[in-house]
Length: 140
Image 1 (cartoon, rainbow, N blue to C red):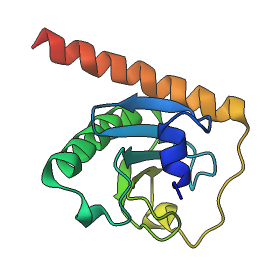
Image 2: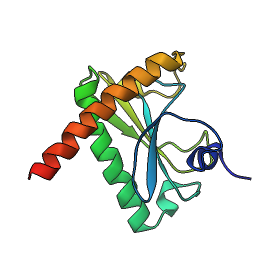
Image 3: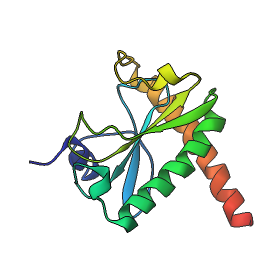
Image 4: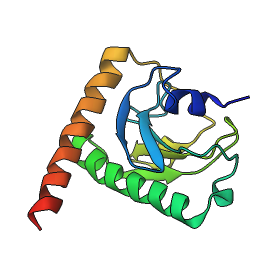
């Protein structure tokens, strides 16, 4: 049976997409630890991140790095925390969480409830910063 992430990647379940590359997709977490929480998901369905081949894991991390840079500008935070936990869904993925303290990325805490409009607004801000980063890369 396909994971919920595979169903999202295939377009069977709607999501708020931030960006993608040939090996991974980045979407907003609809039940975030902090506002702006993003999930970066390899397209291949494997349970453990370390089971991914080098090309896919590298490509997934490069996408996460790019999005984290945009998030730091788009969202008021000290930094963006990266976490690979892998217990809640049997499909490898990276959590990108805007943080100000270590407790902000504590998965034992209760998830936030946000409206679709609030999440979309954060997604739009991140995408705007991604466009700026892409433009800067083209200018180099």
